[in-house]
Image 1 (cartoon, rainbow, N blue to C red):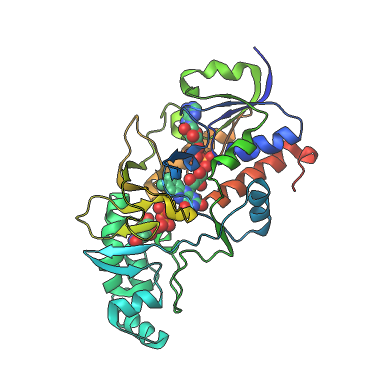
Image 2 (cartoon, rainbow, N blue to C red):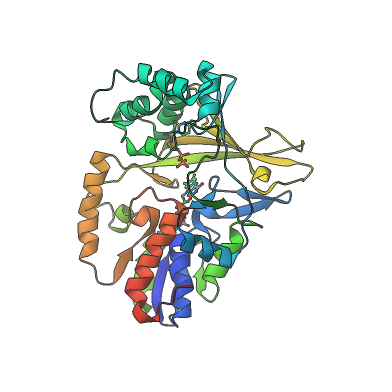
Length: 371
Ligand code: FAD
Ligand code: UDP
């Protein structure tokens, strides 16, 4: 069997970035991916001429100019700006929390009125917020917490908001201007032609084995100097310290015989009773004009063996357990863990790229040339 410098387990963005720069540095890589296609969670499937984000909607956003230049060097990005709408029992609110939301919720018109309303609703939270519920109420008050956060969050995470870490809700901007842009980052967009364009370029020049689970074929590493593992770190160690928890999603995708189903790419269903958290209408990510449309409903659930682990649950208990695995990992000299599952971190795409670039610098040394 051929010898490789690196065995890359998982064909997601993390390993893609490493593969790209390793190739430029003259290193050889074998990629092993258990799914039937490369791309990890950013993979798109073309249905009716529409790029369908098969493993969940992905909007690229970053504040880092060099990362933005890097992804744009691989593919042109469009001007899509994410502005989800929340549907609470038929009442529609703009997201993220901004003057449009406050106006619809309370009829307030000025930022001063909005601030006063929130102030009057956050008195119950004393001191530093200790969990997601306290953090949410302290940021936007009781009404918005009840209508737009509590139901959605408890569906998404399967846990009471009092048992979830505050940082999850701090991902969302709170603004006292009329601005529905979901992100604060300076750069944002969707790759024209879909994410596969990027993935194909990143892995160009690698040997790739899809449909292959490394954990059932560990002998594949015999002919490789090092392994970069982007699957779940607890699975690599056979769950020896116990199981980390993940949230998973079930995607229900339908082709509809209409050109425009919901008028927006993302509509969140924020009540507790609707079983899905959101409906994605994929064509709107690329301003599609196709005759038909494709929509996906997202149903969250607890991860069990055999399901895709999408979201690490970074609460205290899991974080403690993760540290035990990280301790084992730090003693390895042949295997490196990276990415959302390897590092058990709720990373966005730009952060995964940044983390992979950190590894490139360390591993490839002076052979690493950045842009
Ligand atoms: P992954 O993409 O998960 O790739 C890991 C790969 O390893 C997978 O393909 C997996 O099949 C493979 N693998 C695992 N175990 C094995 C094994 N034993 N053998 C072989 N292969 C294996 N980020 C944003 O910036 N914007 C967004 O809008 C956004 N939306 C998201 C929506 C959802 C539903 C999810 C889940 C994530 C979202 N993200 C978003 C985050 C984004 O998906 C990640 O940051 C990024 O894709 C992680 O890349 P990765 O390479 O670490 O992992
Ligand atoms: N959230 C909410 N209501 C919404 C949208 C988001 O309460 O309409 C909360 C929810 O807890 C979610 C968190 O905000 O987990 C972060 O949302 P984001 O859209 O960043 O989640 P992701 O993109 O990771 O699915």
